[in-house]
Image 1: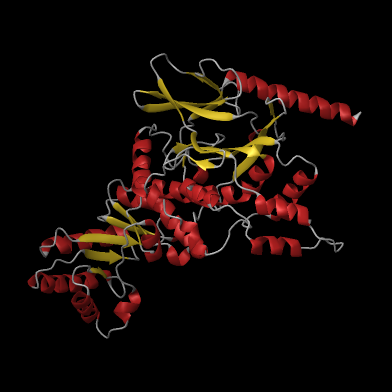
Image 2: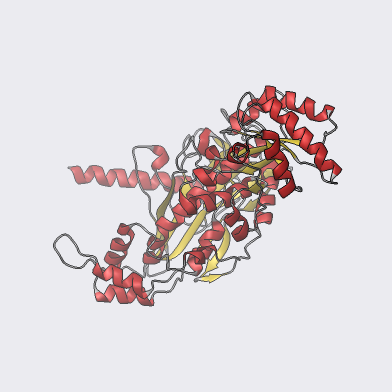
Length: 494
């Protein structure tokens, strides 16, 4: 596994929200720091008003946890922080506790590249509550963003079928790390290459690039600009033809293409970056074919997303490779995934798990108690439903799902269906057990996963709602806890 985070050259243990540390301090002072707890990371609603998401970011999570230490500069900084009354936030005793602390949690996670759904745990952290708490912010930061971008990329790639999709978002991404992690997640989601050279180096993603309008404008004549580029890069000629006039630019590109052919080289194609892409691509395709360049591809870019891509394909645009940037790496129509990380059980001194539940007036914000696992049921290779169950309980067949958002919506697995449990062991007592797949393997997993999901679930607009439900025993426990908490609160008001 590549240690991507080592590129920062410094400890990242303070990459957390301040209240994680103040709570950790309070746990330590109250003697609860070693109490064992279970937290789950999940998202409440599907991104982009869709019906699914693509899990991403686990390799970064592993990398972070493998390097999780507070160094002396971290501890010195924490000691320097003062409360409003002038007292130190953190005592020497707590700082020494952090100095000696070594990660000892269990982590289970759904592998990267898996299709996942709202309300089901993507990641489970079990261990001393201080350690679980200190991981919350960074886990959400990593998984939320990469899952969001991988999902957006998968939607875009599905819109154009077998056409190539290139990620060109570096210049519009949210900072350096945003650009790098977006490139990685976009490749997982299906993009075939990136323009981000550092991402290519770090992650092994193929890098691609054409030319900018500034190259063409640097010359007095457009034809000369193409010819000079061809002399310099004869094996990588994709001419940007829309600087002045796309049709005339294509004709000039063809003339340079003929010259290249005489040199024993073939030009790769042309790129359109503006205008009516359907009309222009058809006209340019005719010109290329008539001139004897049927293999030359038409590349296109211009603030594209899955809706525009699908529309252009339906209109018959003659485009073979699509460059996507801003709307992919910024997930322009949704700022964040909205994943959460919730405490769901505490272990007592006798080793028994006691479930915990966060109540809300919004049913989607009511958490699910227990030590959770997700069982996915298949019929002839097609995913039919996911059942969330509590591993700490004695369980039966686990073949029946009750939708917590609508208890009248239920589904039972048929006898011939098969299943798999999605959360896999990653760490045990702080030791890494999981063999991290390559980025290529993760990307291939996405393709296999998408083939297992009903096409209605994959729709962009008004997708079919895949069944994600609670096992009846877990559902009963959740209702029992909700009732108990509400009754307790009502009594306390009297």
